[in-house]
View 1: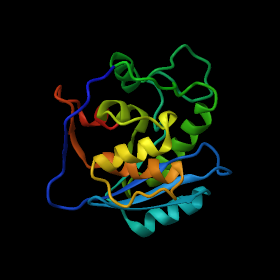
View 2: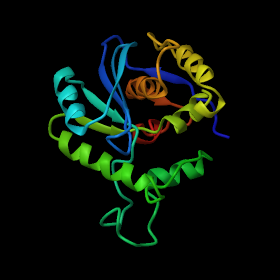
View 3: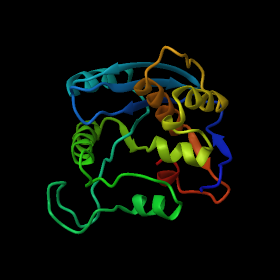
Length: 199
């Protein structure tokens, strides 16, 4: 089991971070949350054009996406048949005993393809990072959603996130968490690299 982390966030300046709990299909809702400092406002969106338009409107400093945004080294496409299935960040999760789904597993293929298209559309305008809320929940000692939506909400409140309420759906709640993890400067006594600490 991973060690629970000690947390530091960026200082007095309030960063503008956007969290996206990206769905693999436009037919399913995507959580969309804008976080300024610790104040959050969340909603749901669906179509790719709607997501891009809303991101352009709110102009975040960074977009944090809960979806794979890259392929394993040596793999040319998500459709390619090869024995290469894991990225370096996936291996880091393995080393830490954190459960995850490889990008090449079943429905993850569709989500990965959509995440990569979104990143390509946003690059050059915004900083786009990949986040993994389940792994972050394990590192920070927050219950995963399988242990109850209310337990997850209370765990996020303990981190200091404001604006959480019982009327939110799970996509909106995850989007809030994703935006928060952008503000994490350092996770863990072992000093994780930023690219790993937010996964």
